[in-house]
Amino acid sequence: MPAAMLMAAPAGFLPSAALAAACDQAAPAWQPSMGPASVIDAMTAFAFSPLGLAILALMFATAVSRIRIFPILAALLALLGAAMLTSHWAAGDGVYAAAIREGCRASPLALIVCLGLIALGMLGLALRRAMRRKPDEDPA
Image (cartoon, rainbow, N blue to C red; front, side, top):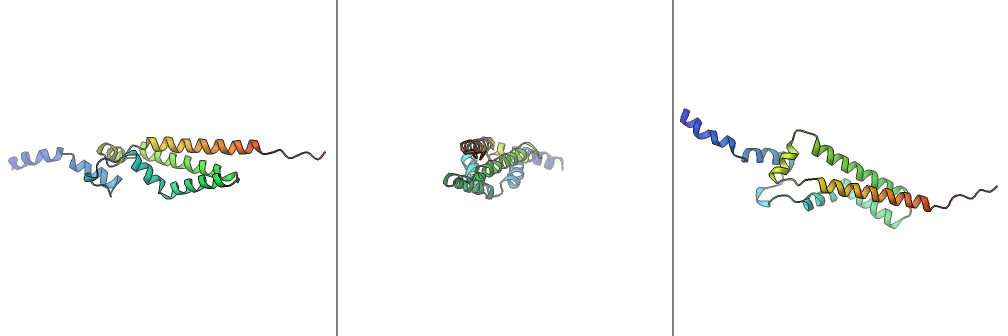
């Protein structure tokens, strides 16, 4: 019995159990044969998510129309996406951080920065449009 325990003990130190647990929870479709996840993978996945598609649609609507609410909505959605990513990455039980260490998830830092820049750009555009608006002339 002690010999069997001594032979089985090193198996507990192998990273395959941790890899399977973190990656099964954070990225179930990822396989080790795919290689480590990149930042481009994370940005592509976000861009084709419902929130990412809504931001892209509002940015397009901002470019083709003069409606002032579109850039404000795009900025709010970009800030919402950045806040959700930050809270999911920073808080929690460490599964996301373990998945980043194992390679099945990429760090969301670049995506958070991009969403922040989109929000700043859209708010700047909304303010620029508001400043260009001609004030109503006073009839008196």
